[in-house]
Image 1 (cartoon, rainbow, N blue to C red):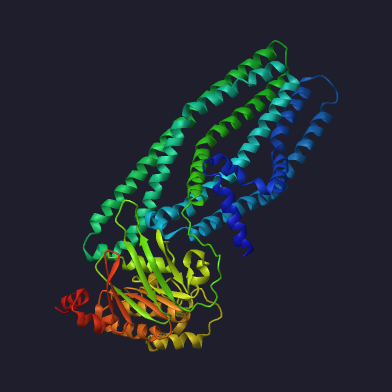
Image 2 (tube, rainbow, N blue to C red):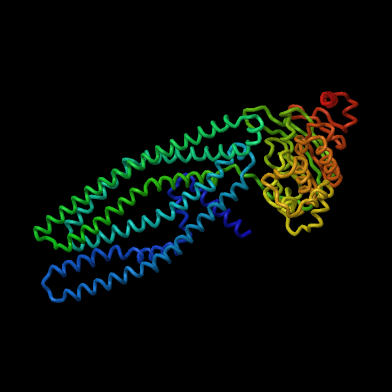
Length: 592
């Protein structure tokens, strides 16, 4: 619970920075200032040999060119000092990496954790619009880009700042003229960045979008492989995805060209400027203004300044990439469409009484309501079946009952309490859902049946499997309950997967259970076994079901016929058949 609270705080803080990727990046280090300062100190130690080498070299060269008798002593002192700074680099580098990378890896973990937690909070309506591949790209690729940026950029920027400050400080102490000459490199660097910044940012944004689309289409292609193969559409699907891959490749190629031209431009400019500096310091040495050692010193420091400014410029494309990924991640953390959970009134032990009071719901304000002033009262323990044509509103009723969304008008009451005032998680922990498309994961049969539950005995699991006529099948497996299922349970038949889903529902002892066309994709033999399992469960709780095959709902207490979002017929199977209305005509049509 403490970790969840930390992630919620993390989400709240970063969602406020969605419009400012710069602040989003800087916020990562706000709570880790102490460790960052320690890392800076260790980096200073790590980098110190680069500042000492030019000084020691200049001192030795000046000693060699002078006629003083303590030349050997000067050389020895400088070599010893240089050796100390070089040797300590081993330890400072190790502890700097240990300190800073622990911060960065922690940020990476927290950011992914916050994204995952936010995804669990987002409404189902959000997922109907957002492709899963794009979300996967944000959790994997974008977070990795941010982690790489933080690891490389912060370290590099610190080295750049310290190298330039030290070099300029030493240069200023030796020659104000050369110090001013060095400053000419700064406006040149700024000018090159300004020249390319908009193009680089634009190409990074385009490439990120294309990469998200590619990830999404590949994920979709994998899910559609059975359908694609069944209809002989492999070439069509391949062409579609390959076209998107090529678009991503072309976008990446354009980004590479911009980055390459950017890099070549600043390299040529800086090399030319460094050659100019060599000529300028050599001219001063000839005039006797500086020593030969100073020429080497200034050349070394100016080389350091140019290299670091060059590194800063080279970092700019990566900086744009990191900011773009930060912008991408913040889109999710700041997404407002979260599932409402008021938790005003405690539910306690659910009885299973449900009432729909004048409920109106529309998926889009510009569309006709899917449910139009729909009312229905259901007693605890009653079995209700919904029947109607496609788009009549059957699945919408179930979605609202589960709490995936709330009606625009009217209310849904559970045991007399408005669902808007309930702790939705407390409510859902006492219900079970068996969807049309069975959702199983790559794990053991035991893990799939007891998903989300702790300390369930194996005897209890086998008892439930016997209720759904799967116990004998499980006993024939070499590893029994520990048999691992393939992804989506593809190693099982359709009927076995659906009965396993019903077993998952039974073991929760729900007081309300929802069957959303649970037998629509099954053959008659499998359907009969699933129907038997369903009927045994109907005796223990309030049941809501949607079914196209009307024979599967014969034992429902009430059948409600829905048309244009309203109930038009209601009664038991036999009562509706005697009325010879909509239900009767639909049943006769299925018998033909």
